[in-house]
Image 1 (tube, rainbow, N blue to C red):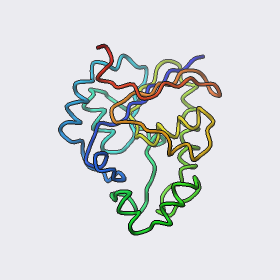
Image 2 (cartoon, one colour):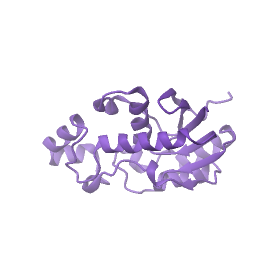
Image 3 (cartoon, one colour):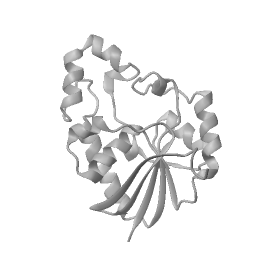
Image 4 (spheres, rainbow, N blue to C red):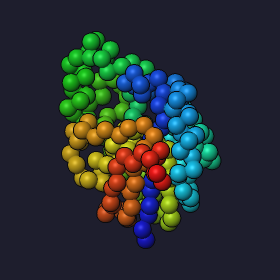
Length: 192
């Protein structure tokens, strides 16, 4: 059985624009407008899921999706760094940031290590492989990166080398253990 999964990243908000660890801020007007303009370009899905973050929930709504919250597809828990920019944390805790960026098991922020996110994403993908048909999920960029690392069987530090822009589609097709990956298709350019 072949499974098809399309992952949509959230539209822009203040946190994304400012490179701030998610602080629960809402979509900005331009992000909402872009998502609304992309709504007709998604195609049908057998199930529609959404990460429980504010920007994912709002993106799903702007896309006109009736999505079921999926806690396993949540973004990386940034603990006490939540709401701060990387520059702010780097100014206060440079050694902690360097540890976090080089060691997938590091948790200087008290949240979730990158390796745990990758393992959670791998578990979600394995469970999704058992679902027939097409899944559409609005998820955080770091969840997409964790899935890419998993599918490519890449080393943990590769997580930091993947750039996943807002409001793009990443497509997975295949079955557990063997997946094809298509990264970063812009929703707005589809059908042009």
